[in-house]
Length: 345
Length: 264
Image (cartoon, each protein chain N blue to C red):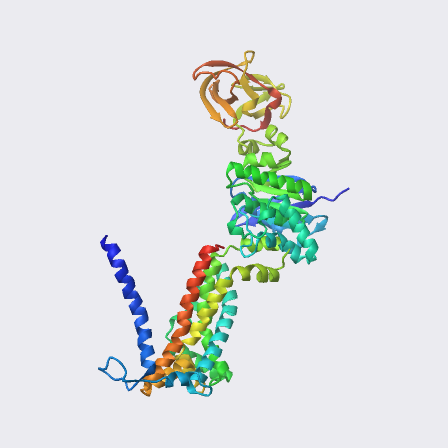
């Protein structure tokens, strides 16, 4: 059985005067993409820097490729750290930037040239090998930085907000190159971001950093459908949080008595569900009044008032309802997560 | 044409004249014999002072050699010492940083005679008073102050994350220094060297006090020529002293143009 590319055991890191992160434990397989998602200031970057050996640890162990690297300096950890903005060496050509890790390792010149050529070709920079970084476009700089990182053949590639501050077309370009390089060279990717969409697109598993701990670690489909706590649901921006109580297998709230099997069996609870779980349907058991229609890049959503609550629902594909129109709506109960505790809508 | 557009060539011309006129005057004075007020031009012209400057064994040639040795070594040493001090100060925050900057600024801000007097006692105790080594060390004190303050500014702005990235790519700290940081900051290192060079080049008080008259540099010779009324030699020496400053202007201009063309 292959050893995990990265194991964090009970890690604790501080950042500034903040309490920091504690009890961070996780494991990443070779070739896996793990995204750590957290709000700004949650300590994501500090955690990544600590794994890279660039920031001190308060406690815990870091194992990379089966080797305990906790006490090793950054250059001996086999983990390459990439900043949000590509930091190419300005005094070196694109070729020499990519060759940098190979020269450090003392690779023979013919092998070095062949490896760099292969990497530059894989990121479509083979015609720009002699150029200086300042002459490259933003996307080209990102591709060169990724090629240089892959030249080091790291067990783990640590990426700090790799797609932040990029325009949409550039995001697709960089994301595509990142995924194709990873598929070829198979490092484990650990990506930190505050962007839900980046996390959903890049992560095979997503970890949520909340309140200084790893609040949930799951594949995206489970994370978004089954948040582990009310705090996670709020962080993920799940639009519909309905307070009620559980009694005899039913969720009782202003929405009525809805049969729900999962979650707590009694006491105050909050039902969390996305707009995709609530939609207009002639046979729906909920009645609501349309208060707003919002158009976005992925279609339209409705703000619907039901029992005094304003909930978000998916708009129908056909004719758009009018403001003030009364609708019947269906709620897909398997997509509703019942969480202990009372939350606000 | 606006008043601003009209005045611009006038201002530029005035600046040019004010910069070049003293140099021209020194040049004429260095070759003019028996040139006294109110004559506008020397009655006779001689290259004697310049011949002396470049003649082996001549006073001015020897002093020029000593000045060059001192300035080059001071420039190199001050850049080498100022780099880590400036970098360390840039890492500090709050009062330790202000204290460090003030300590570096002290030998720069204090009157040279005061600095020289303070250093003299140390030089006597160390047994280096009256030696070239002693003078070199005394030049190093203000030069390191300048260099440390210069590198404090550089490292305050320098993006250390590029070094971090080099480390994770497998480069140990020494490799990062030689292959990343130094090549990236070569222009700044060159400027720090020139700064140290010029500080040493212009030293009079410390050379006089620490050297005790046994170490003769070009500024001391110019001073001596002036006192002796040998204006031709003083003018030639003054021009030789001005050359590094003019070179510095050219180097800085070249560096700025390159920096604009190749942003870090």
